[in-house]
Image (tube, rainbow over all chains, first blue to last red):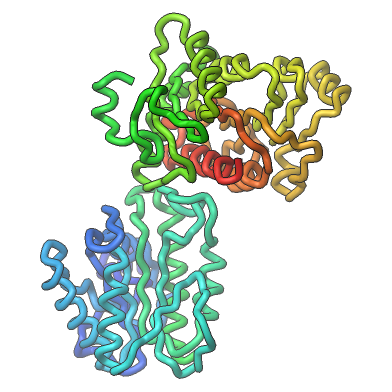
Length: 224
Length: 256
């Protein structure tokens, strides 16, 4: 078996091909990427929960960010709302308390909500959420902790397999916006896309993967 | 629309309640599906368009900027085009804007036959002879490819406004002599096949769906009737063609 085949069959699929780890492996400043398998709580649309799995399988290790780790999926309880939120908030807070930064991938916008509460709990202050479309009021200092919200429903219709609107951002515009996010990005959520799981979902999966790469690199930079 | 069909689709187009013509009020819209089918060529499926549009607006949660009723689908047995003409005339007389979801181009012919004196804004790749013969000038949106010489003669002799798909995509969307009131006919074949494949016509080099919606939305015209034809939803698994039709219709109603 050649090296490429070994890579293909011997490794566990992970986000962007980064190494797989657990909470105790995290170091301050590292980026922990976790899947969020829940799409029925806020702006529900079935299928969004599969984004994390899709991105793991589509990832290639060539451009794996050096300082990131795939933490697996956060535990979810989609049928028990209160239990779900307290569990997700506790897990996100546990990650942020290590000093690592966190990216939540997939699902609906309820993950962002939980991430916001967790960040507030850890920092002791409100953490502004910056949408990928921009439009944050006021100027932020580069040390201000912020959460980046990447709603993939902002992509223009031509980039996705089930378009909901004609106009919107291109992946390149989104990546430029992510790169220019002000403040100290301590966490991010990428959500809102129900990818087609076959060949028809190829374009949107590649777009989402490039966006995840940009988000991870932005978090690695820390204070912008 | 019969009861079995209504049970399958719980709400009308863009959430409008299903109703009868008599329930429509002045200033409102009456949405009517006319599921006729193209009778030649390899691409068909236009008869599925009215219900596909209703379903998609339901999925997207689309709303209209005006009130109205969804009148269901016209029964296509017998003299349906005569009945359609009568319905459109009655709606126009009561200041109700008919929104007719075809169907093939014969649906638009019936609608235009009911409103013979009004100018037409026609979004379509090939200029039609019957439109050049109407008393009022037609404005052509998104022409593309070779046009027949006699039709061009008519268009230039009567100084009708026209823009090609390419001109519009490049931002040249200014139309002089825009009428105050007109009928809007959108043939979905005006859209480039590469952007939205769900049309009965093949139109490489056609318009971008975004351009179509923005050009129609920028027209300061009071639409007396709107008709959409040539949409074949089963040819577009992504639903981009339906989305283009829905957003263009909404853009038109926002202005007109």
